[in-house]
Amino acid sequence: MKRTNDEIQWSNATDDSTSSKQGQSRRIVSYIILFLVLLSWYWGAATFGNITHFVTACAVGHWWFTGEGSRQYTIGASIKRAFTTNFGTICLGSLLEAIIKALRACIGKDRRKNIIAAIADCILQILEKLIGYLNEWAFIYAALTGQTFVEAGRSFIELFKKRGWTAIINDVLVGTTMMIVNIAIGLTSALAGGLLIYFFMSDSPEKIITIIIASIVSFIISILMSAVMASILSSCVRTVFVCFALNPAALGATHPDHLQALTNAWHKFYPQEFATSGYAQYLPKPTMTKDL
Image (cartoon, rainbow, N blue to C red):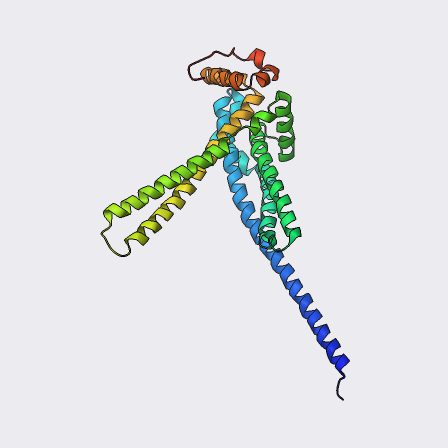
């Protein structure tokens, strides 16, 4: 018995609908797998970086503070804390950061085709910067006080508001400065690598290509190496901010000359915040020096 045209069209439509649903299901599954893979990668990388950030903050704390309490800031003790008592704090902050990065990576290729994806990407970009900013300071506070991630995030915000330092930390140009230094190091290394090939390699048709490859490789390697050092220096500077907000007088017992220099700089560039911080009466009086 032959099928009518309506039956054939209905059968084709059903097949197309089934194929479309199967294609959508496969696409959703592929997105989920991609998200989980990216999440594991970003989470591991962020956790490793934040452990370094945590240990660096402890090292600065050991330099800043003195007495029995400073023993928890030694390198051995800080590494132990980073992988035991404070490991959950580090993992939680890293997880939040990794989730947003993984989501951005998944929807990144669709943002030019879909307005909703573009809006979502903008929102995620803002959240990524916000959480990254919070993590930088919260992990320092957690390293110095032993608080959890949520407690440390709340405490450092309250501390900086109390001291009137919210505007000061917004003016911190450490990241921009380190980025410029990294680029300068990369360009210098690329130039050095290219010149070495130029002077020591005999003339040949492949010489130009070799110079270009050597310059690119030198640039990438130097950028990666300098980025590690820059992140450590950036962590040190931010930890000094937190230590100075927590207990500036403690530096006077360990490094009084540095305390005097910090007090002079604080008074010169932020006199109003210096006067209203509540610490001015306990700190050495500012003295104008040639450095300032």
